[in-house]
Amino acid sequence: MPATTALRRSLVAMAALPLLALAACGYGSQAKDDDAVQVAAGAKKIDGLDSVRIGYFGNLTHATALVGRQQGFFQKELGATKAEYATFNAGPSEIEALNSGSVDIGWIGPSPAINGYIKSGGKNLKIIGGSASGGVKLVVNPEKIKSLKDVKGKRIGTPQLGNTQDVAFLNWIAEQGWKVDAQSGEGDVSVVRTDNKVVPDAYRSGSVDGAWVPEPTASKLVAEGGKVLLDEAGLWPDKKFVITNIIVSQSFLKEHPKAVEAVLRASVETNKWINANPGRAKAAANEQLGTDTGKPLPAEVLDPAWQSIRITDDPLAATLDAQAQHAVKVGLLERPVLKGIYDLAPLNKILAAQGEATVADAGLGAAS
Image 1: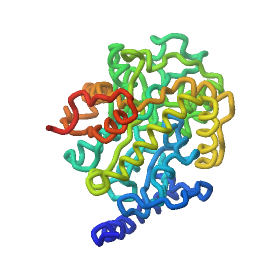
Image 2: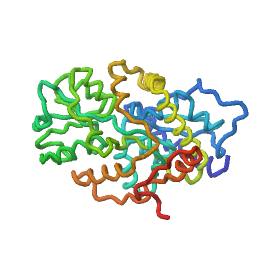
Image 3: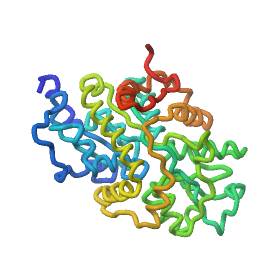
Image 4: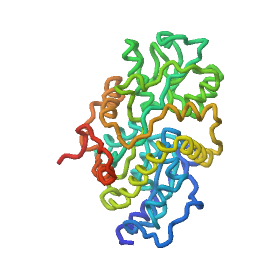
C-alpha cells in the first residue's frame, strides 16, 4: 500500500473514533462485517485497497445497498478488497462520516447531499449515481383528517428539520397558501420533527395526527390504522423524483477511481437483479434489514412499502435541483450553487459498456 494511502487510513481511523462513540447513542451505527460473503479464489485488491467503506440507511429506500450487500454484489466486484459497511439513522451523521474519511461511498437522500456539498464549498462530495425514486407518503389519522384541506391546524410529523421529507412537506404547505415558520414548525400546520423510529409510537399516542415520511415508516402507520392521503410521487412529472443518491468523497474518487467504478458496477448489477427478481429482492432487502436493525418487517408493512419504490440508476438530477429550490422557497436554504455536484462519467462509462442508456446531470456536472 502506498505510504500516502496508509497515512490517510491511519488518520481516518482516528477521525472515526468520535463517530463510533456517537453510534452507541443512535447517532449512526456500525454494521457488522459480512463473514458469509466469500472472496473468489485468485481475486486481487482494487487500487491496492484493503477495504472500501460503504454507508447506507436501514430503510427500504436504500434497497440497492441492502440487496447489494446481502447478495454479495459489492464484494464480488471489489475482489480481494473487502467491502465494509456502516449504517446510519440520519443524513448529517453520514455526511460527517464521509468528511472524516470513515466512509468512502454512501447511499443518501438528496437534502443531506445538497447541504453537505454547499457547506463544504463544493469540496467534500460528488453524486455519482442514482438508486431509488418514490416511496414517500403523507399518512394521516382518518378520524381526524378526511381530506387534504383538513391538514390545516393539525400536527404532522416529518423525520428531521431540513431533511428531504421535511422540505417536501413545507413546500407542499406553502403551495396550499398556508404559513409555517420553517425553523420552529409552528403556523397553520404544526410540523413535528420526529425520528422515523418514533413516528409510529407518536401516531399511536395521538401526539401527531399524521406524518410525511418515507417507506417503510409510511406503511407502518397504515398498519396502525392510518390512511395514505397523498403519495408524493403524484406531485412530480412522470411520478419520478430522487429519494436516494450514491455519493463519494471527492478525495476517494480522485485517488481510487477503479474502486469507485467497482462499487458502481455492483450497484448497476444489483439494480438489474432487483428489477428482474422483485420477489427475491424484496426478501433479500428484508433479510438485511433484519440483520441491521434486529427485526425484519412483517409482510403487511413490507409488501406495500416495496411496491411504492422504484429502483433506478438514474439520479433524476432535475428533481434534485427542484428540491433545492423548494428548500430556498421555504426559507431553509440560501440560493445554492450546485454546479459540479454531479460526476456521472464513471456511471455512464459502465452503462454505455453494457449497452444501456446513459443518464443526465441536468447541467449540474463539473465544468468541462
